[in-house]
Image 1 (cartoon, rainbow, N blue to C red):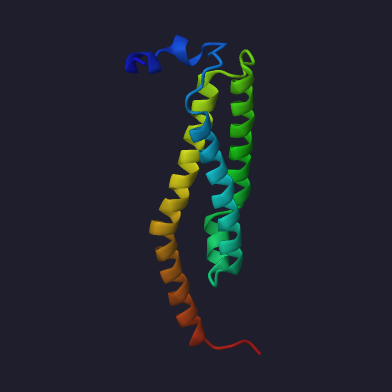
Image 2: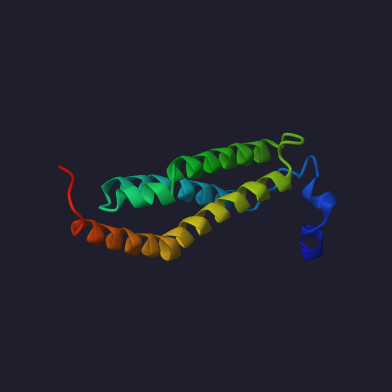
Length: 135
């Protein structure tokens, strides 16, 4: 395959891309990974001692990942059945890009934003310990 062909509009928007799809199992594994990772995050957030912060930073993350994976599996089905217009390469590329974006956002939030929020939360908690209590 020629790399210039990959960026061609005609290639991406071809209504019947063909039944041969070499990356079917790779895409299926990626969408399955999205579902498994989403369920893992749901359990992790539920059991975490910083549940409030994580729920605020990653709202309904498992639902978003599962929905993306579901639409990905639907597009893979359309692609294997060679259904015109619904099996275009651009739709599958968009869903894959959305899944990668969501995973990258989760990693970014957990690695960069969560430690800052946790520090602010502990500072506030420490300050509230010395504030007068209401009667």
